[in-house]
Length: 72
Image (cartoon, rainbow, N blue to C red; front, side):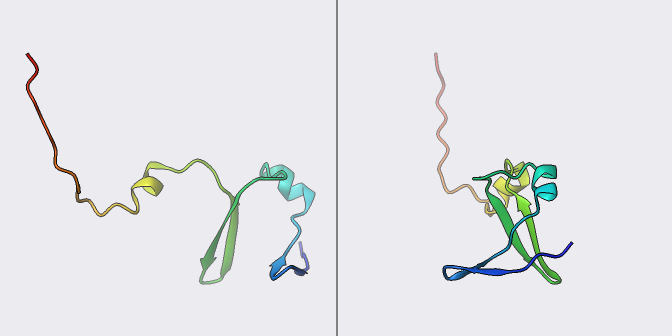
């Protein structure tokens, strides 16, 4: 399948054929994630983040002091 890049404002755009949009649930307003790879780029619908996605920016250090108290 081949698509042609077009000018859209200061950006370049491509149209996603309906068959692929339908297959991957892409509708107007769907957020897509684009990643630069060594062979080009990957484009995929943005889904709910995984636990690994959420923890990726963490360095493993807790910047907050913990506070414990004994309740009677």
